Length: 364
Ligand SMILES: [Fe+2]
Image (tube, rainbow, N blue to C red; front, side):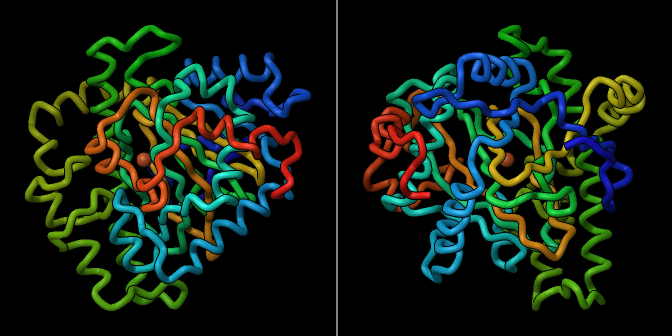
């Protein structure tokens, strides 16, 4: 997965060399990662905040997962996600929706939990809840998310059900930016402040990129703007943290990036630390092959890029809590399907599921 990144965001320094964050999945006789493999994955998670497990799912299993995602996307009554990219969802640039807690979806999630048990259990107790199971699909013309942190206290998982190319918008991570620090040593306040400063610099470039892209889409035949789309994405008063919304940027209504952040002292610090910011943090874009699974600490810096290809990008995603959660925190940051809300499941429930005991699952 090494190589140069070819896209329209040449002014954002992103590497597509993910070799340093990859672990090839090797399974034992019970179907779980072998201990050396799980140890390597835990070390990656502790150091970089994320790990890319290649070959965790067979192609047949990825195909079975893709069938679940397609079925959800084909359902006109599907449960759209409440977090991030609502405007892109509305204009069919993305389709982020919760998957129902059906026997097939639960079996798929249980298999993943079982295989990854020795990595996940370093963070999640058996009683900790499954917060959501979703599909994250993006289409040509979606916006590049701002660099952000998800709500803390969660381990999230992305499974690539098809090959994902750079142009399709594999997730961008900033290694080592989890606030809990590196290998158990918390970051000092100065380092955390530098991360905030770097995010401002990156997000300025992302705003410009998204605006330029929307401008180019006006006369495009490939991805023409829909009725009201330009207004919704640039001048709307509606909540959406990831649009290049100039109105909300100017009046300070976007907590991820707004004019209020560009104070004279901050601009001075950006100038003074410009060399350090260039070298201290690096953005890495993933381009997972079919069957690859990515685990990450929710509060590390990351972003879902725009899809710059005509091929849809589809991911399966699930999130597990690292501790007990209140219902308010759960439902404000994550999007459980109504069937999961009705019958909540824990990490332990997934591990106890009959499908989790199958080494080669019969559902695939
Ligand atoms: Fe996120």
